[in-house]
Length: 250
Image (cartoon, rainbow, N blue to C red; front, side, top):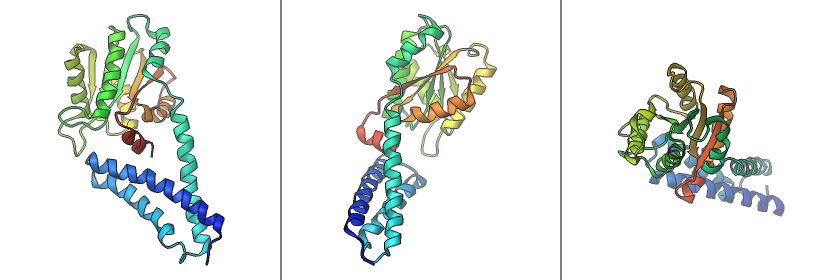
């Protein structure tokens, strides 16, 4: 069944947007040496988006409409998500927020750094997070720090141990850093770090400032709102490359 011209144009636009997004995602996944599971999803979406482009003349109109609606649903929600991300906080904004909780030297502050891919040394994205955490720890000399992250299947060591060594290498005292080495997801980063805080008198009762990449803050905010009484702030580290930011937004 032949499609009408407006339907064809709308379908083409939606499919191109999805192909660009997931094409970048797939390319970055290969460059970053993602696991097979991490490659399957973008590859599947790319193939799905190609179907109405290649076979649009052979597909019934109702199926073309289904494909178009699905692609436009993704496009609209992606745009909304990107807009939401832009509202979250930079490191400087977070530093201003926590003054009311921590005072000038940060006695009531814990900096919680969320892990991501590491090699023997932190990846560029993780190093950006740690650099932002370092700035806060320098600004607040009495603040403590939690680094959270387990060892992934494609990592030679735990993310937390790599993060701790990186901060020590920058000059942060080892006794200010607490390593949580079991978390394998954002949910576990938060849950296990909160457990560590509960059983560690030095950490208990402090205001938490969550440090992660800019694209990650919206998810962290939702989870922290659910798991805490609101005693937290957010500090976003910029992504090292545009394509990495784009791939993580997708």
